[in-house]
Length: 522
Image 1 (tube, helix red, strand yellow):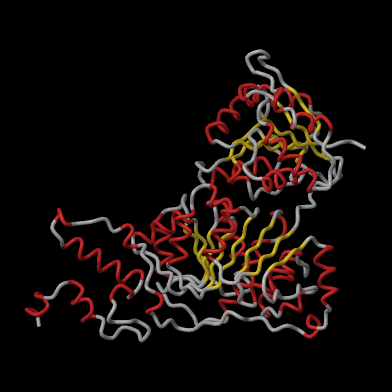
Image 2 (cartoon, rainbow, N blue to C red; image 1 turned 180 degrees about the vertical axis):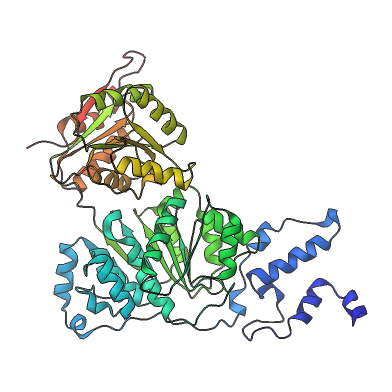
């Protein structure tokens, strides 16, 4: 036997050792034995090869199985049983509810929205969690997206307001999905995979799952940068029903054959538009290709672009598209919105002048959004030099440093928070007197989300957005945003946006700064 094994190549030896493989494994095709098994075999073969004959295994380890050759174990994903109260609701009532709440839907056989929590038919542990965490209420997003997710349908959700309860919108159906599957074993891989755009978003989702753990037995692991890899590898070995991950870290583990996605039947992509913007399209495709094609997929985005449409077409199968209308967060006309037109080098001076001219109360706070981490650090130093209490937060800081900075700002130890958008996307705080877009946001939905923070309890607040004198295109985007929010752009803003041919040359007017009120007062 030993002599026979010595004459076998690694593939033959591997096949002999796996004669008792599970019934769903096609033994005649070693390339479909599994994410970890086949890649480990090729890694072994590569190490045994002469040095000059070795090749890169990065793309090989990410190669998806040949799903059409696999007999996959069945799973249950249609969990929804429509209650009689929902069935009896007329189409006219459903249409009126959607129109009143800014909900639009597309797709075949879209389920009717829930009007009360009993219609969802959630298990008792989830009902208890909802009543405890949400006080028995739910958002318009959840009212329409929950029945879609519970029906096992693929979902493409365009949500323009982060405050709509999006995380619970996909996590509660995910937990219901888990409870209808067979229990997982250590190292068998997660049932639910949630992909987020950043480490901060991943940690926020992980915390929501941990808040739900007192009501359910669902376990969670988080695979993202900023935490020791050894700790995350231990989580992978122990196993968890839900895996929250950033695309880059997950693909890194997949390249090393450390993660198994064969059990995954529920995929969530949270913040898909932002992932595409920062170049994660390839990682998303690789991850999705390594998950069984009959999975359920929920794609969440803040905007509907051509790239998003293309990605939805690739990832989703006969989806239901749900669009939740523009945020109602700052329709109050007491929120003053200004466009500050100045050269890039003048931004810092004008920002300090702005802070000096604002009457501050003891509990007032300000947040300044900046694109680059280096600008965040330099701006904080400059503000401190001018006598303002300021703190920075960006992705290069450790989690402890970020938590300290946020706590200092929230509890009024410092007045000004300077942050990059990726880190500050989940910030929610009261008493924000002023929001400054030091750098213009990439997406209109980000402007809406930032401006919402400026709304204080009495409806007042200020939003200042900085633009260069020649950047009329951004001004036109702002006009479109204001009109979407049922606000009338001011004549000065309209004139600036349409005066492309009369742009002032910076050399002839050095230091020139103009400030336009963006909303017409009436």
